Image (cartoon, rainbow, N blue to C red; front, side):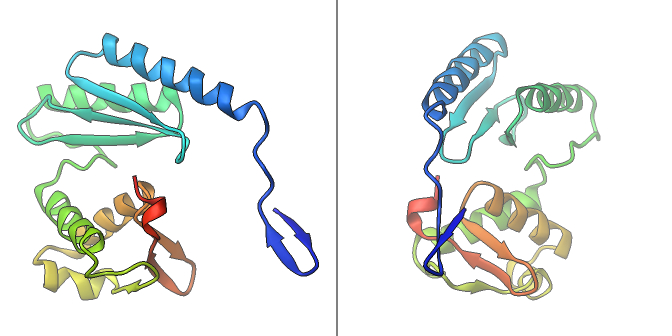
Length: 166
């Protein structure tokens, strides 16, 4: 960020950004062909990989900026799929978290929660969504990671504009 005349503006990205995106897209394509049952994409806007899996009956989504962390998380998911009762931290695999995420995303997308609106706290949303606070917090975290929400420290969580949505 640079400041000029009391205003803050973003610096333009380095010219190498386009090359990095092309490389990341090629890596995502290569990984997808290597890991059957996974759809892996590169989001240039978020600068992150997203992996979708149909390994289990419930869809799983992993967001990671690093290839090594993504591969580690894919390995964890595949191990959890083979080991009944095992869960993976940070993956939307809990039915309550998934339901809370879908309800909140639907409210954002259909305009019930317009851009700029402050979202209720997890404690306030839990009884409305009929899930526990942990599920609401995980859902809020996931929606923030994929671009629907932004959190401002000591102020709250707000809906981002549609141009920021995936």
